Length: 326
Image 1: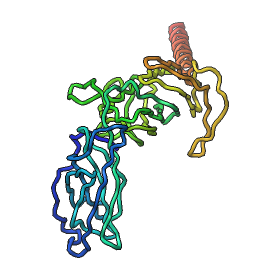
Image 2: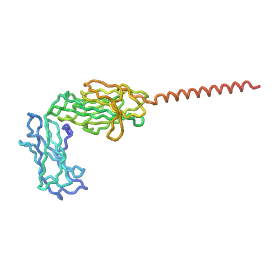
Image 3: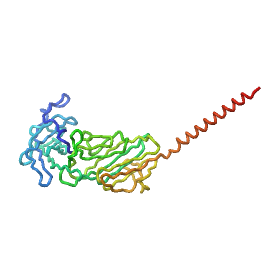
Image 4: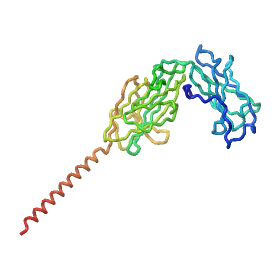
């Protein structure tokens, strides 16, 4: 994971809390982090800062910092070890923070090592694209639940940021447009809510995106405040393979053509799917959601008017008969 330097842990060691065992009851180890610049002909890593966060169970107990030497190594000594301790390594390069995989601090020879890859940073975010993009819609109560899955692609050998800044002077690396009236936005893959800025039109991510392919997903709701509504999807990134999956039972969609078939979703349910399409940045897709029960409220109104007219008619007849009595 890659975050801006604003989210760097404080480079200090924290004392253990009262419910944690004393570090002296555990063996101490030497932790060595090798920092590698994976960008071809990348800048040297010597002098970069390396961070290691120590966790006992789910609790963070300390954060330490060391400088990377000329051989690309950062050495941390006297770190508490044992099977209940883990280390989360990070390295700062080109003013960006790069993270590695958590490492167990249990070792028979009291030495643990890991490798963290860093990259030089580029600022041309037009190189970011989307491979597969799936949009799934289903009804939940009076709302549409929309889930989007995106395969984000960075085909360069650099981490990509952007020179386009928001009002808080943070880069708009990836911008995602969402339909009007969206709410209850939640992220489940790739996007870190602390690095995302939500706007009326969607959201943008301020994290630089590392090289390679990254699976991202998020979900949101749209209130069904009318019987027929348009769902407008604007593509801010070039997209190779966009497909809609529908799990609407009491609604139909128009503007997507005919369903191509049904697909078994991961949760065991079925969904109708529509033909995949590619889109350029700036293209828009508009499709219409219409309730099958759209005529029922109208019928209720017509019936209510008819009953009301009948009641008025009967009242007039009764009054007329009453007046005609001797």
